[in-house]
Length: 142
Image (cartoon, rainbow, N blue to C red; front, side, top):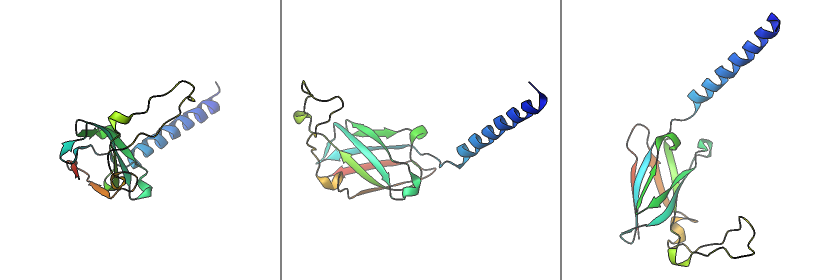
């Protein structure tokens, strides 16, 4: 390989490393989030919690499953500090709709939610995720 071509390849590789390291340092710091969710005093046995940033620039929607009233979002996939809308779904385990023969692949069926819309589709729930502080949240829904 001629020297000039080797210099060009080395320059491109160096530029890529600089760009990659620059992206890593400019991305927002992620924070772990843990918590509990109860509905009418009882832990939600099997649900989903979703955090939607109030600031669209964050582009950091995140969430977790809820099992036996507890959820956890690990730091490596956590949320940047900020204000979030919180949506919680608790599908009725007695009314899950089985997939039937002839259904299209990937077809989904709506499962009734045990929570009122004010906790999911029309959520009134909010949370603040803090940087460098424990983010332990409790949602006691009525």
